[in-house]
Every structure is written in C-alpha cells, then in structure tokens.
Image (cartoon, rainbow, N blue to C red):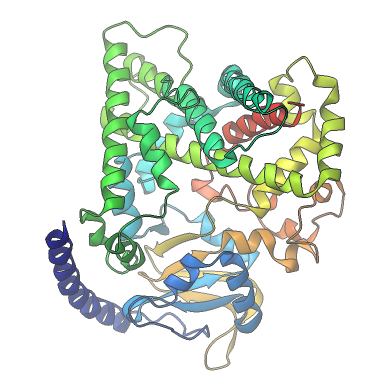
Length: 485
C-alpha cells in the first residue's frame, strides 16, 4: 500500500512539471483584463485550500468583493487563476450561456464521467439539450404527483423508528440526525428514481448504503486530500487509485448494475406496469418510442440523479431541523400552520401552494445552506460579460463589462449571492422565513435570476431539473418530523 502511494506521488510530481509548462503557455495566450484580487498564499495550491477548508466560503467571497469589487481574480495552483463574479447581471449572463459558451472544467468532466458516465451532468451543448428534453417528462408535476406517496411512506417509516427510539428512553434519546437524513433520502430517491429499495432505514448494509455513508467520513488518505486539492490544475489525478476514487468507482459499479437490471427486466416484459420511477419511465420510453433520442448508455448514465437527489434533500433536511431547533418561535409558527393536517396528509397541490409558511421555511433553508457553494466553468469561446456595477482592473481602469477570453475559468459564488447583505439586507445571515411572505422582504435580491431569486438550483440551461422533486420530498418529510409530537 505504501509503495503504491509513493509511486503515485512520483507520477504526481512529473505531471505537476508538465502542468506548470501548460499553464504558463496558456496564460501567455489569454488577454482577459487583469483584475485585482487576494494575494496568493501557496504556489502549489493557491487559495483553493483556504476556500475548500473554509466553514463559510461565501463569507470569504463577500470580504473579497468588498475589497476588490464585483469581479476579482482568485489564484490557484501553479500560477493559475480564476475570475469570481459577484454581480447579478454578470451571473445571469454566465448561466444563460451554460453548456455552449461556458462548459465543465476538465476536472469536472473527468470526475463526473468516472463516477456516473456520460449522462445529463456530463453532457454539453446539443447532447445536453437532447438529454434534458428526454428527461423533462419524468420531472413534470404530473410525474412528481405520482411519486408523493413514496416520500410519505419513507417519512412514516422513519417517524416510527424515531418514536421507538424515544419511547425506549422514556421520551429521551440521542438520534444521529444526519445519518437518518442520509438514509431516508437514499431510500426515497432509490425508489422514486430507480424503482429500487436500498432498505437503508432498516439498517441494510448494501454496497450503496456503505458508499454513501463513507461520503461523510474524513478519514481519507493524505494522497486523496492532495489529489482533491490539486484536481483543478491536474484533472488527470482523478484516475489515481486513491481511497476516495475507489469509493466512487464502487458506487458507479453498483448503480450501473441496478440500472442494467431495470433495463433487462423491462426488455423481458416483466417490468411492472405501475413502475413510476424516473429511470423506469426512461426505459419504457426507450422501448416504445424512437423519438426519445437517448441511447442505452445515456439512460444508464443517469444514475447521477441518485447522488444529486440524495445530497440536496439530506443536507437541507438536516439544516432545517437545526434552524428550527435554534428558533422555537419559528417552529411553533410552522406547527400552527400544519396543525390542520394532524391525522391526514397534505395533497401534492397543498404542498405546492397551500402551505405558505412551510414553503417559506424551505426557501430560507435553501437560501442559507445551498448544498453546492459555487459553480465553476471554463469559457469555451471569447465572451463579453456585462456588469450592473463598474468593475476595476489592477491598473485602476473602470469597466462596465469584462472581456473574457476562451479558456478563462469563471466562478459563480452561489453561497455568496444567496447570503450577501447587498441583496438580502442586514439580516442576510439570519434564518428569517418571514422575508418570503413580505412584499419587500427581499426586494434587492430580485435582481438575481434563478428559482425564487436564489442560485441554489443554478440557472439557465443547467438549472436543476429535479428542483420540484426535491421541494416536494423535503416538504413531505419535514411535515412528518415537525408533527411527530
């Protein structure tokens, strides 16, 4: 094991030298305006380590935006840089050109292909447009309405487990909330997305459950951490046999097996006619319609939906419980709204539009705690990015737009845009669901495009296809948690 890591480090050293030459050559070819920005702290890592290890990366970006304006340079490893855009107009332009003008970085494409295959998250341009069009019916309101009972079943199952735990302790007990949120989300997304029950809530130690549980551990090797930090400048390192990469390969192999089994069952004519899972709908469409436009390989690669749905919901549910525990007054207000549903379940329509305070709680959690803190892309072509407020170059020149050359790396700081006082007011960092119920509760934030003026679900061609799915799942489960007593 040790010799393997030593050999891997030798390979890394050689690749680093090659990478340095490539970066210096590519920098000489680009003419993007030089911007101000924070000083580099490490030639090897740049400021990537500082950002990745920060408890609140959005706060870093907010401090830098106050010092350097709405666009600034952030140094990376080996002299590489990226431009961070902290402006609503610039972000709207950036997201509108996703998949064609701005594409995944090499690191992202290597990572996504290794883990999921060439599905929707990996695809760019026309391939992305075609796959998204094929997937859209599976995420329509009609499709999600049929999946709502799946969410309720999982919520009732977990409520029963928690009740048993607390009853055994005479009303008291210690519950690992994050673990249970992970398991309920995994079971729900497994059934709704794949027609497959992982039985995580029942304690089943399947390969998928083990892999997802390992995501939250911090016992990765030094080489794994090094590869993660160097990934932005050396994407090829994602192929090294680190502990983290081995975990990802296990997940890919297991999920591929499940999707293969679903496809085989369907083609044998044994698929149940009432299968409403997302992958099940795609497989049926592939079998009955030549207009779907997705290959078998592309359908199987959509296992990305499992991780996306699992992560978004489990993190959001955990933060929602934390925030309401901190604010008993908000918790009581939500209980009052939900009190009429004790003993019965809200319908999909009621979940969507009939519970305004629950909706406000959900939006506020998503605003404060986005599962993904930033989006980073590389310019696939020369571009001119407009800004709503002037930017200042390192020479002191003021500009209303920024010329971006092909190959320039751009970052949209989601967490910053969701929590900046400039858009959300002096209580921007506080949990205040009421802001969503007041006409002027977030007036300045209306400059920000995206779902409900937050960037948690991204925007443009890559806006999260499953946002309605995630919101319905969140609301169903949270209702049962709040009303459990």
